[in-house]
Amino acid sequence: MDPGILRQYLYDHIPLSQAMQVEVLSAQPDGVLLTAPLPPNINHQETIFGGSASAVAILAAWSLLHVRLQHQGISSRLVIQSNTMQYELPIAGSFTARSYLEPDADWPRFLRTLARKGRARISVSSVLEFQGQQAGKLHGEFVALAPEAP
Image (cartoon, rainbow, N blue to C red; front, side, top):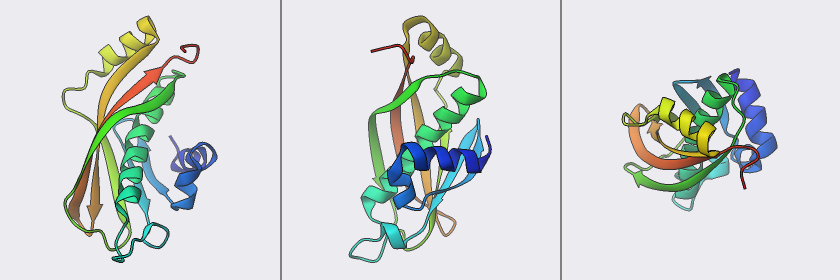
């Protein structure tokens, strides 16, 4: 998917992404790479606010599923069910969030379950990086719902 198309989708449908000045560097079916600057996400310690770091990590993970489903022509509603976030280093500037499917994620099974039951769950992770170092990691469980599912 063209990064500009994904960025505009996020801005139109998840307005927080625009307020945080999230940019899409790459949007591929095997991973999405987002970036965000310090100024709109700053905390009282002049580092990235933890909620902003978590939000960008969730956006990257959510976007990966969005891109993969769009790539396969599948329409669905995506929501996060649960997540854990680990903060490893303070982030004092622009940072990235790179998403990927968990190694044990079974994409074909996810698609079969979505088609058969109208809902399916899958694990996605995002790694936050700042100045070439891993600064945090998100593990999320996401649910895809068929458009007609309640």
